[in-house]
Image 1 (cartoon, rainbow, N blue to C red):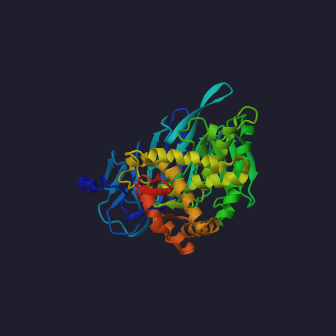
Image 2 (cartoon, helix red, strand yellow):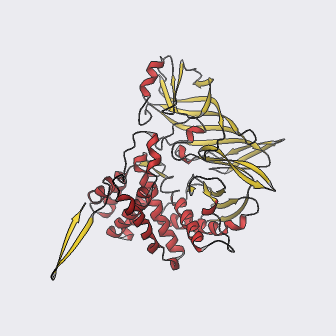
Image 3 (cartoon, rainbow, N blue to C red):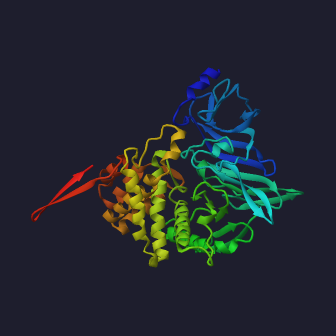
Length: 473
């Protein structure tokens, strides 16, 4: 039977005959031992005849004896480490419709700054661990077994068991908290549907400051104890950004709260987790007495970028990593639009030329890639988080806005967000909405820009009183 499971090896994507609808997760991070354990109950919709369930898992010890689907134990459990998949083979075909997959598992709070990891911080002269998640692009599977692809959106209901003195944050607000001696159990509100890479958890000692949007959403900035004053500028930008994007997209911020957390050990600038955005400290904290003007701009741009993702990326998510630029290009462009609105004296669009130039530099190389890149294996994904997806993507978006006009472009983006909210979209879906609203041949105009690498070069020759133009590339 194990030979049959091998048919799922080497595939670019998981099979579609079964899909998750709701995850119920209970996790117990042990910050002293740097381990965690957990249980998952996943409502799975089986839509086609099969005797298999195929999902992602990596660096986890799954208790095989605990695995059940509708009370049935699998006849065979296969782990293919290279493909990071867990294949459950049952003796007979699974009943069509929704059933519950349950299992127990444990893992290590690693020091690799991906998956569920530990970050060190100082408190009263002692070095302590906090527990942090970083799941983009494909590392939710290192925290719990899951369908770890953007198009497998599902609801999440989380419960954490943590030391009672610590702050425990997740995507949604806390609905119940029970303390039993040294451990407290924290239960969170169920989330709307979202992709696995946006699930987030942070556990540690924090101070926070709080603001409120015009719609009544609570916005908090969490910092190490004693640093909360350095979060005031980011909080101000965060509240303003949510207010601006609500108007720009004509769609309210989808969650009840937004937390922004400064993490000492963080591999990226920031991560747009739904309702719980994590940042490297230098991209969230600003000290009025000692920080530079460039730090202030970086904080503003980064906060505006991550909060733009709450709509472009989180509410509407790329269907597959080929369309990553829909997340990153638009968030980059929106961040400049927002910061220019908040701080017009900065002339931030002039500075945007630096982004265009960095993209041109990379795009001039033979080893460059198009904005849209076909991804054939999870191992290829991280290589496209670069200036092409972010800066070239943002540059061609600005070009398209100039072509269509700011008002028509904004109206079309609002229509796109409404149409694909709580769902997934491809680049072609965006072009179709832009064409419908504007009446312009957007797909024909933009396909070359997104599917071909490089850029056109205009050669100019002066011959007497005549100017000769030649386009290359």
